[in-house]
Image 1: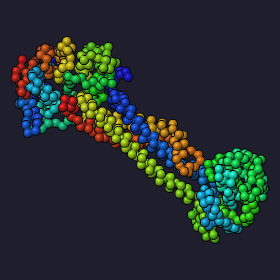
Image 2: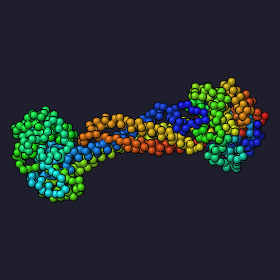
Image 3: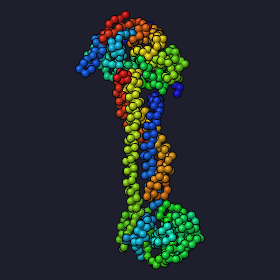
Image 4: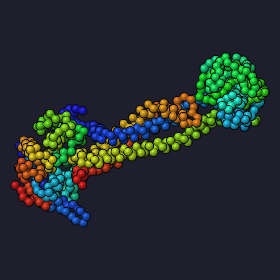
Length: 403
Length: 231
């Protein structure tokens, strides 16, 4: 930097040049802070991204509540874990009871059946079939898209719509035939759904009446999806549903809360690790700045002899700390942004359940808050070294080397 | 024009250091008056109290006893002295310091090093003639060089420029040529003499080098914390 005559050197310039003296040490300190900031931003980004994706997935389900026969597993994963057994049924009349309630906007009755397919995998496996009402189900599942074809042509048609993964596994396309194991009934594939990231991907859909007939469950249902109006009080409505005979109510808000509680527990553990990483990097900052102060005792003594007050020296050392933390914070934010896809990939591999869509959401507010927090922590950690430097008496500082 | 009014008056000052139960008098009841425009060299063997005396006169240290008046203000009397911040304010108004080691900031250029005092304090009217000052000290071609690119003599001249940039009334030089060869030592001596004669700058010099001491107008010999001879 060229300095014009009669110009003064800014405190910032002196602080910057001081840090440049021990480049490797300053760089390592900045990297330490950057790594801690990276972890911090990624974690907060994950927290917000995961919640948003889960909200979106639940909105895509189309209904906020399921009424299922008492004791019946209400989602495919649990059913599979139970080996496809334990299905309970309720009469179709329950739909009429439900739609009487003023809060109900629409309903869709469903029947789930599971069969053992000896040709699935190496030693056979379970296949889940979901019988849905072709009129109401697509309306309540606006998030579903088709890779090929579309929904059934008739409420009693011998047709299937396959979930994305089910079609891949069975190697079926629109126009192919599909044989239901154990039943020896062939159905025509009329649609293949796009990937949704939900359990729908592994499900084979049939018209409700067709499935009831094939499995001899006429008039029976396993669940009813309910969409309530936006103004409705969910808790009050839930109470009403509980009064229906032989049913249980599953609120998807509850499901979401349960998942978020599980995720929060894991998050607390990871946050603790991040906090330790931050504390370690802050200790690194204190060590770096303190070492730098001790090495420059004579120089600080000269500055004080030249007229620098204790406050001037304090500000100089504090500025050096802030610069280290600011650089570390900015680098950490850039790392978090640059590696968010990789981080998401790793998290997806580690998590037993991950919603579709982005898992990490890093916004400007998060970045600015994280950098601000790191600089604030840096300022706090700089107090002690700055105080040590500021209270040095010039003569003692100048003499220090000889002692 | 050289004024003859006193700028520093020391009356029976002592500086006692404690080492365990033992008390060592580095300065032992010394009285001295420094007038504006003086060029005084303090000489004496190691441990005679030269540097301690310079530090006391330059307000870098407080006497243990006696009275010290600087520029008409009582800095210390009867064991009571000014606070560190009050001493800093006196130092930056009145004194410039140079030491055996130059203590330049290695990552700043010559010009930047000279301008550093202005970061903390700028005396009214100071800083208008920094390039002129550097030219006078033979550093005009070195302004954008780093200290590592300079010779020992040049580094000390930068330290002198830094000490003078705020137009001090008194320049305190503690073994300024301790790290230089005899030729460079005399060169620094001539610089100090010129500053005293042409600018009327009061110079207090501590040195082991008798040749350098001879550039001063007054030489004071110290022994055991007392004045042993003066000429």
